[in-house]
Image: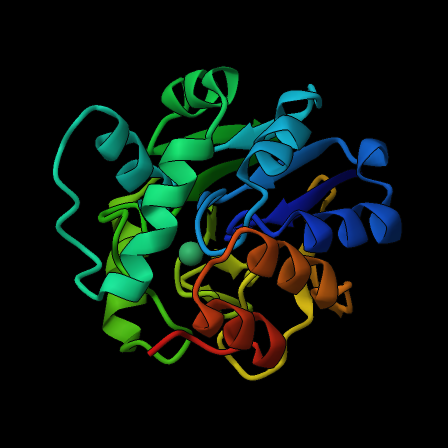
Length: 240
Ligand SMILES: [Fe+2]
């Protein structure tokens, strides 16, 4: 049996990632899959990226926040988000990202895949069709049928919506581990999942664990970042 740790949407929340490390002992897994959004809204993009750089069994892709950081650092204009308070964190991250971590982000694909046993696994930020698509578990069934048809993968590991779920449509498994560092459902605890694959069986378990939010808050204050970020991490909700 293969065990895969599913992480995603960490959003530079290294204290949350460390809490998962303590809870799961990631080095015991056969793979660690990360669905992207390493960066933005917490202050630890370097520590977060470094964590993945140090581990050989990781498979990571870029998320939309990471792509925006890369665009800013190429000298391009930041179109979204439009709210000034949100833009602050993109510029702060761009200014504070270390060159070796920028190089690592630049080396990552927008989506990837792997084969484990008889299963082809796709790793997507949004969906196999669109990296920016937020696929919620209550999306129309027709959308899941279409995605099951559009990809040769039997397992889709996705992020972006920040909603943890596991749904099987037409024999295809759609799995979102939720967000490690920035939940939207009013529960600020870190979310992740464990995928277990044997020759014919697929098992998924989701977890929510507490982490020291105060470490994130302290660092936001030290760096004089907007108070709305503090609130977001404390209550586990979106900025708007
Ligand atoms: Fe995200």
